[in-house]
Amino acid sequence: MLVQFGVCARRYLLKRLRARRKYYFSCAVLASAGLVVGLASAAPRMWDVMLVNTVGNALLCTSLGAAAIATFGDAHERQLVAHEAYCGVRRAAESASRMAADMIVLAPLPIVFSLPFQAVTNFAGGLRALITIGLAAAWAISPVAYACTVLAPHNATILTSVLVLVSCLLFAGMFAVLPSALPPLGNALLGLSPGRWLCEALLLVTLVRMPFGISRLYNLSELQRIGYLSSDEAEAVRAQMPHPPWWTQCMSHLFLLGLGARLLTLLLVLDQQRRQQGRRCCASGRARGDAFPHNPRVGDETVASPRGDGEAAAAATLPRRALALLRFLLGSHQQARPLLESVEGYLEGNQSPSMRRERRDSFDSVGDDSAHSPAGEAHGATTTTRV
Image: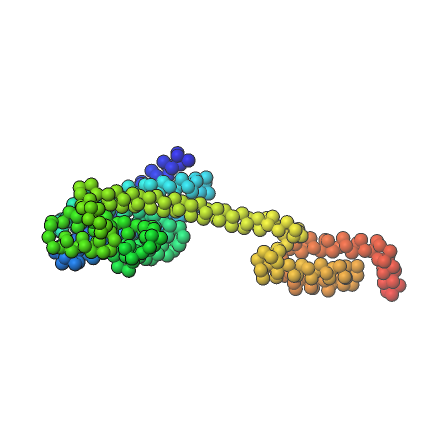
């Protein structure tokens, strides 16, 4: 398991290194996004500080989620994973190695976004805090793209974008849903959104380190109204100390959410593999005739069951049953042989010549047996007398 994990991780990193032109383009896009957000929030009004930071955080998270789709969502990647699983590589090792190695690929993207943003805006929280929040966003948001890719590989892009935007905007605690207006159970459910902790960490690190003034007081009061900052004076003062408790709380929640989402993705991958193996076994069993052991066999082919494939199975079964009934009724009469052959040619015109030859031989054996019987001898004597 560990050997397969290491081999798959090295192979994935080498593959991403060969496709580095696409990676360079992603870095250029994120650098442009950081520059645009920085120019838009270079001199915001005091009531726009939280709004601009929240929108910038949502843009960064959406870009990271879109960059993580290629880990499982590319068609060639899915074919490679299926081929390796058929050759004996465990899907758990393949998926876990990709999710672990992908953090090495995604780690430079928040840095590329943060550098132009810090250069334009002179971010009050500092470049180190901004990069740390970006890395936490890459850890917590990328499993959303993994899970969407496993569940809906053909619609993973739009599904990931919608979920990330809903998490970072609607469920971030800034607009539609306020933590202060929710009951304890609602706050617990809101805590499952990574955008809520990312937004809280970004806003608090921005406002707590701002210079003292009316803009800082206004935004801190807004954070108390929202519920990010406690209304208790002692706790509010403690939250503005050099090592605040909210920073550890936000980072620990983001780490746990990212770890839990990765475990969930791994379970989805294993369940998908189990379902594919089940469908393969059923298909091979139907081809061999093992899926319906009660079916009668004719030659080398198995009579399909009407419960198997619906109309196709019924269409394949009814002609054989009709022929069997006709042979049972008319098999002892030699004069009925042309009629049976015509019916056989009409009902089973798509059968192979070997199948027809076997059916004719079986018919001849039935006729010979009937000829040696007393009824057959009497019938033959009657026929001879008539001639």
